[in-house]
Image 1 (cartoon, one colour):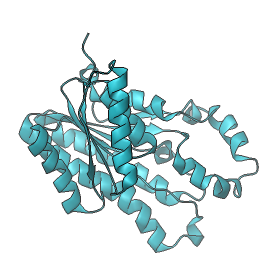
Image 2 (cartoon, helix red, strand yellow):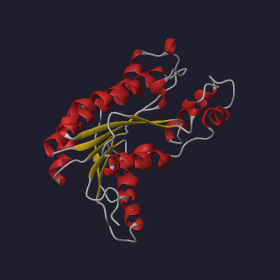
Image 3 (cartoon, rainbow, N blue to C red):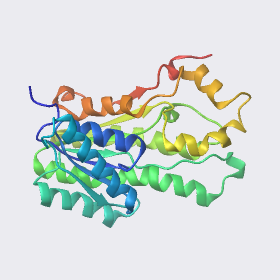
Image 4 (cartoon, rainbow, N blue to C red):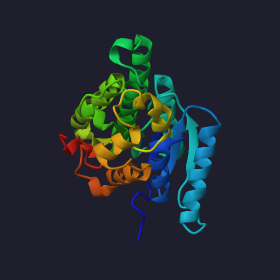
Length: 266
């Protein structure tokens, strides 16, 4: 039985850690050729090596996927274009683009600097736009493809002290829907994944700041709103489905993966 992503070439931005790392790992285990992208540094190279080693072990020691690392700053259009063009030149095509690179912060609106607002929007929305733009063009020229943008449940409701993050993720959902309509004639699908609270470095870095704003501990809040923190691999499983041919009639949709957090009014 062939793997779900066998023969597919995928780029995963933000792949050195968190959700991006989990998605790149699952893609490699499913037989894809994976280009792991992040800001330049040892973390990127180490992540690609670990993902490739894990995929080989999962296949019983036989390498079934090629995993490489390419540094990219998603806020720089030339860098994104070079990432996409380089992937097509090296591997002959681009089947899947996952925009997972992201940053966050905690600050009430009245205390938030314009610099901080722009920092989050630049990575979390502008970066997704640039990856969508250049991936879509390459996929259209190659006969089709699949774009998966990582958004958040914060796209659908307000949340104290994270207005910049929520605004960016709402933009990602809208962008994904518009892109899906524009690119349908070129056989390019575009979807968004909207996770709830997931255990990543981003959570660890901002946990204390969140607790200062909550009337309870952070763990109590998570237990109340969604039962527990999600696991990166649970989001990666949805990405595998969307990247595979099993979702060939799915486009323009925002997939909520939040343990029921947005289903409750209490």
